Length: 188
View (cartoon, rainbow, N blue to C red):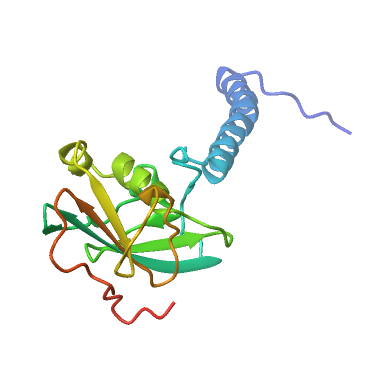
């Protein structure tokens, strides 16, 4: 039986050295790539801080889903309730109380049934929408109406209930207070 002689030529030594390095480098590259993929899968971007106990989640929470209407007047002139109150793009999330369009419909989309108030929605509006509306009405008296009837007490405590019409008047109220809201076919 003849022994195979080891090739100790310059090129053979170089090939063995490269093979040894590759046996170290390839597993390191695989480990780094695996860690990167795992990190990308497990990474949870920071969410927005809760406002008045209302969380901001990446997707709509539909276990409790109702709609309330809000009309706002300043010295008798109706003001637009902005769209996308409580909907953030960075980080991408929706507060449980939010608007989608300028129709004054407050969407209550929460993970559980519980009472939410107008004050919580107003806090979210003030902190997530930069229209400056609240700066313009800071010193004005506020009167609230629910389904056309004057609300006695702190307007911020008005519960958001299904198909309820809430009117806030800053300064002089309009001659006619809306008692109903156009919910556009929404039935709950």
